[in-house]
Length: 310
Image (cartoon, rainbow, N blue to C red; front, side):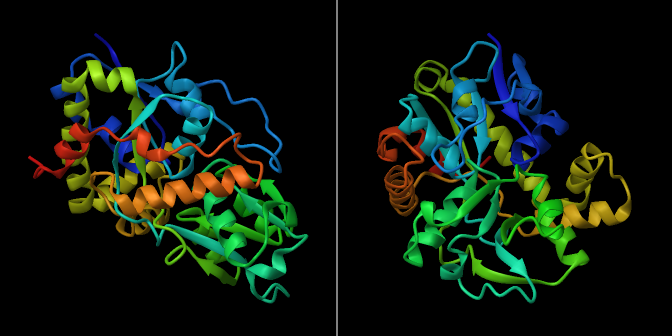
C-alpha cells in the first residue's frame, strides 16, 4: 500500500526526514505530500473562526495519512468532528517565538492591546499563544483586531507599521531583530508548552500499526541526526527558501539549535493545556465546540514512544 506523509518546513522534523530518505528504507510505499502544493483553505473570518486545512486534508482523497503541525490544528480538527489521534509530541518549544512590539511602542502590557492590530499566523500555535495571553490579562478575542499574516508575511507587516504587535517565530523573528529593536510583551515560556504534534486518522492507526511504527522510528533517527548536525540540517531550509548564503544558513542553524527534537508520549500536562485551549477557543467563538483531546490518545502509541529509541 501507499502511505502518504504530509510535510512542510514548519514541521522541521518531517521536512528533514523528507530530504534524508530514511523513511523509504523502512517503508518502501511512502509518498510525500508537500502541504504547500495542496489547494488553500477557504478564507475564514479571523474574528470568528479557525481554518481546518490540516485536518481536512487528513480525511480528503489525495491528502495524507500522517502529518505534523503545531499545537492548534489538531484541537481545531477535533472540534470539527474529525476522528484523528495523536501519535506523539515534541518537548516544549518555548524559545521558538513570543509576542513582541517595536521598541518605543506605547504598548507596555498585554492589557494595552485592547483595540490594537495584532499579527498572527491564524490557526497555528500563534493563535493559541495570543488567546492565552489575552485571557491572562483579562481580555477576550473581541477586544483586539487580529490580523492573519500567515507564516511569512508577518515580518514585513510588523516592520512596515501595519501591526501594533506580532507573534513572531524564529527564524523570521531573528530577521526582524536584525532590522529593528523589539520589545517582548510576553514570553511563551510560562504561558504554554508549545510542542510540535504528529497525528493521523483513527482508522489508519488501527489498521496500519507497522507503518506508523516505521514512521516513528524514522523520525526518531532523523531527529537525532538534526541534533548532531544542525548546520547540515539548516541548509535544507535555507535552500528551500532559495537563500543559500551562509548568513541564511546561520539563521536557520540558530533556530534549529533552540528547538527540541524527538517524539514523546502524550502526557497529562499537555492534554490539560489542550483542553484549556479548546475551551478558550470555543468560548471566544473560534471553534464550534470544545472537544476533549483525551479522546485522541491511543495507549499503544504512548507505549511505543515510551520505549527507548533504536
